[in-house]
Length: 243
Image 1 (cartoon, rainbow, N blue to C red):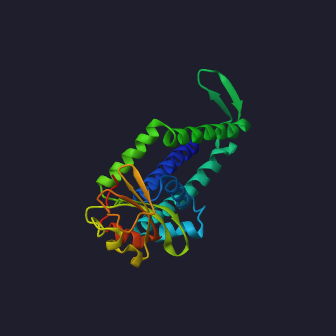
Image 2 (image 1 turned 120 degrees about the vertical axis):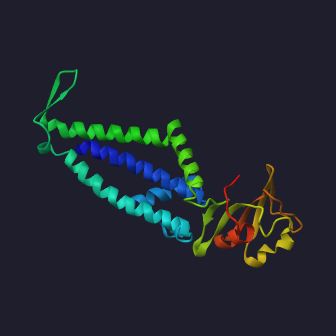
Image 3 (image 1 turned 135 degrees about the vertical axis):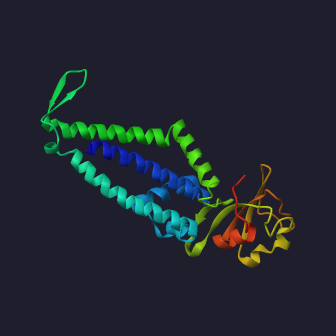
């Protein structure tokens, strides 16, 4: 019973971390970073000062992180208790018989059998949920559910790098209500707000270090440097799903 409960909690933990990673991605984090942050919050490890700014700078991410931390602490306690009980010979029968094979194992081997089952089960769950077609389908399903239920407001930018003080490089799409839409870079006057446009991507074409008379069009993807909050407010104040 303890072994079964342990495996159920392990499976649930993988699912919670994956859901958290999807939620973080919808707030604008790059996928690999979203997975790392979700795992860090759930296990309470892996944070650095610079990476923690990605979480603390956004109310949505703080809420996601709080839920993951609470569930992580509860799950860790349950895992430790059930794992320890799974390896206690005194809680097991004197001997263990494998059905149909007529093999009998003495009780002192049962903890090792349980440990082997745990390792195989954890590896299988890891492969199925994270590195298989069903796992990818589950991720897509979770993403659609989160968006449809409006649990998270998706954003149309991707934070690529963060420096101290909230500065970093962000990739953000120009939306319909953007204050810079149909303006040239000179007219948008982003530099006055501390935002520098490094690259404009348009219809598969890349325009590095664009000139001041370059006009910003709907659907353009801007790669900017500056304070992340200023970039969001200056380029796309209405946040929505990326194309």
